[in-house]
Image (tube, rainbow, N blue to C red; front, top):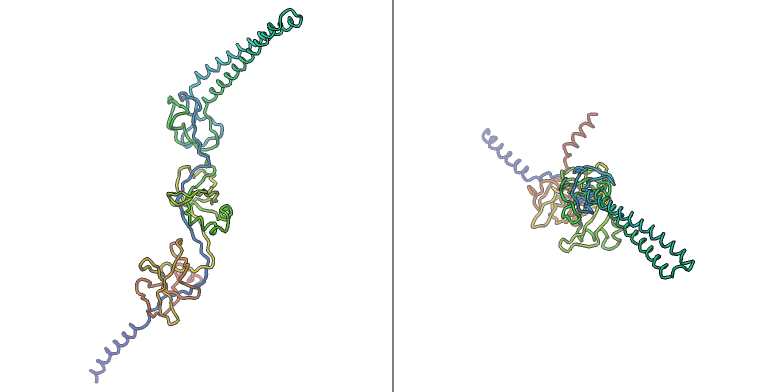
Length: 381
């Protein structure tokens, strides 16, 4: 009898193991319901100042002074460079002397003309002689006008030897220094002044993006731009620029080589941290209402298609093909087809221990560690 009892215990233990192995595993599930989703699209962007003005001399001369440095902020009208003024000053002096000479000639011709008129009125000289004096006066006055024009041109050229900033901004690179020859025809400008109190971030939208913006033609591009939300700028180091921007324009031409259109967003830049020529990423937010959102871990891919496990009324999982939005937050998917509100899906064991047609025991998802800690603190209070 003792031997029979001992033999019975292993048999019972084996039956219990078989029952445990046949039990449906506990799998966390969720019931789907419509939600709102805040999605983001990112686009590479190039930053340019509101104005990037190349500074070129309007006369040819050697640089005598460079009065600013690279990266310096300047005000409109501030002197940047001076060119050698000797030849231009000499031209001004020469033109001024020519004006004086021409003025003297006018005075002499006027005196002669007045005298001739008096004689002509008394019939002492002929009309021909009188007319000659008038013509000489007119010629002298014309020569005076030419001399004054030459003086004005010489003074203007002399003024061009002082190169000033055309607007407020930041000085770019200065390739030429004192002693270098500067010319309007030089390939390189003296420098560039960038007005970066506001900056433009240029990025591209595809033809499909543009069609989505205008609702397949239901509204104009101007109305679509006006309705667009503010955009964010991610800098090259990964940080977010603290001020939001606004899309200002969309190019009316699609580039045949890229299939995209250029878009310009405007950002205020009071601190000057954004510089012309920098790069970053435009973050374009998109809000969707009444959509189905599921965790990415609740899906799997097979032959370029994505699937989720739907739990039926018999608590068996059914592999269901779904389609999703291309944009996501890195943790969840927005489902566009394949799932409906009220359905249950498995959210754990997908791709590892679940198989199509498998029976499960649905359970509530476990709270995340942070949520569990918060709940424990609340319970202690």
